[in-house]
Amino acid sequence: MTDTLIPTRDASLAAIASLSLRTRLFIDGGFRDAQGGGRFTTENPATGKPIAEVAEGGPLDVDLAVAAARRAADDGRWSRLNPADRKRLLIAWADRIDAHREELALIETIDSGKPIADTVSFDIGETANCIRWHAEAIDKLYGQVAPAPEGIVATITHEPLGVVGAVIPWNYPALMAAWKMGPALATGNTMVIKPASYTALSLLRIAELASEAGIPDGVLNVVTGPGASVGEAIGRHDGVDCVAFTGSTDVGRRFLHYAAEGNLKRVLLELGGKSPQIVFPDVTDLVSVAANAAIAIFMNMGENCSAGSRLIVHRSKRAALLEALEVEVANWPVGDPLDSSTRLGPLVSRSHMETVLRYIASGRAEGARVVLGGERVLAESGGYFVPPTVFDGVRNDMTIAREEIFGPVLSVIEFDTEAEAVALANDTPYGLAASLYTDDLHVAHRVARDLKAGVVGVNAYAEGDQTTPFGGYRLSGFGGHDKGVQAHDQYTETKTTWITLRSRP
Ligand code: NAP
Ligand code: MG
Image (tube, rainbow, N blue to C red; front, side):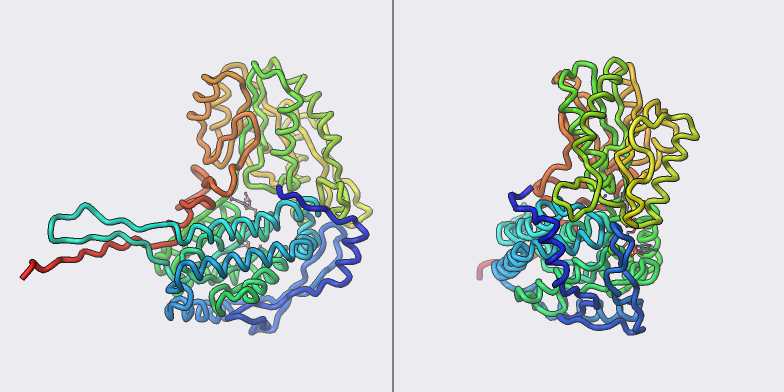
C-alpha cells in the first residue's frame, strides 16, 4: 500500500460532480463511437443507479482496433524504439496515472463498488507501480549467445509477438489490465484490450493518459462491449498474436477453443480459485491468524481470485479461532464505498449478489451453520451489500467448499492430522493460492512443498508483490504468469540467429 490521504466522503462527492467520464472506444490514439452506434449503461453498485452510457463495440470495432495495433506493430514505431525511450514513455505514463490517482480511484469506486480507501491507496497506486516496474526492466534485460562451434556465432534473442489482445475482469479493473499492459508493452508489443462491461470506465481514462504521455497512436487500443462479441472477436482474430485473459475458468477455456480453431495464437489464462488457509495446532497467536484470514476472504468483498475461501483449522483451535474471527469482523465495516472507513462495499452487480446469496442458501441447505453474516444488508440504499459471512461445520464436499463464490463467504473445515490438512487443501480442481500458519519450520516447509498452488503464504495471507510471478496450478491458470520479469518472456518469441563466419582470407 502506498501512503496516501483518503478523501472524505464530502470531498469525493464534490469531485464526482465535476468528473468528466470517457465513454467511447479508444482506437488509434483517439476516442470514437462504436460503428453500430450502440451504448450500454454502467451503474454504481452502491446505489443501483446508472453512471454513464458506454460505447457498445462489436467485431467491426475489434477489426478497426486490431488494424491500428497491427500497423503500429509492423512499422516499428514502438517495437523498434530505443529500449531506453520506450522505458521513458512508459514511466511518463505511470507518473500521469499517479498524478490522476484520486480521479481514477473515484471512477473505479463508483463503477465497481470497491472502497475508496482501497482504490486510492492500492488499486491505482499499484497500477502505476506495475507499469513503472516493467518499464524499468526494459533496458536491463539481455539476450544470450549460445555455446556454438568455432566459426559460428549463435544468438538467442526475444522479439515482441506483435499484437497482444487482453480481456479483463471487473474485480480489479485497472490493476488486472496493468498486469497485462506492463509486460506486453514493455516488450514492444501493441495491444487491443477489452475491459469488463461492469467496469469499463477507468481503463478508457488510463488509455487516454498513455496518449498524453507520448505513447504512439495505435500502441494501446481499448474496445468496450460484451464478452460474447468483443471478447470472442479478440479471441478469434487472426491479426492478434497472443491473448491474455483474466477471468472465470469457463470463459478461459473458450479462448483455447478460439485459438485452436483459428491462428493458434498464444493463450495466457489467469482463472479462478478456491484457496485454502491451513491453521496448525501449534499456533498461539490466533488474533493475528484471524486478522490475516479476514484479509484473505473479505478484502475486495471476496471478489478476489486468490481469496482464501476455505479455512482448514485443527480441531483443537477451531472454537478459539471462530471467537477471534468474530472479534476481527468488527474491523470490517460494510457501507458506502465513498466513506473512507468502509472496508466492504457492495458486490459488483445485482446478479452477482444473487449468485452469492444462492451459495449462502446452498450452504445452509447442505447442513453448514452460518455463524456470522449470511443475509443481504443495506438494501434500502439500492446497493448490493453482503456482509462478512462465516460458515462453521463445513465439509469439503459441500458446494460452498468446492465452487468459487467470489464473495465474502468463508467456510471453516476441521482436520486432525497434517496429512489430512494437506489432502483437504489439495482436494479442489483449482490451485491458485494457499496459506498456512505454524511456527514449526518442518511443518511449514513440508506443507508449502506439498500444496498444489502457485503462491503459498506462510504465516500471512500473501500474493507476493510486483517482483514475484502470480499464476495458478490446474484449473486456475494456463500458459503463463502475471508479474515478475518472467512475465516479459511470455509476450515474446524466442529467435535463434545462426551466423556462419567465413574463414580469414
Ligand atoms: P468472466 O465472466 O470470465 O469475464 C471476464 C471477461 O471475459 C470479461 O471482460 C467478460 O466480458 C469477458 N467474456 C465473457 N464471456 C466471454 C466470451 N464468451 N468470450 C470472450 N470473452 C468473454 O469473469 P468475471 O466474472 O469478470 O471475473 C471473475 C472471475 O475472474 C473469477 O472466476 C475470478 O477468479 C477470476 N479472476 C482471476 C484472476 C487471476 O489472476 N487468476 C484475477 C481476477 C479474477 P463482459 O463481462 O464485459 O461480458
Ligand atoms: Mg459499473
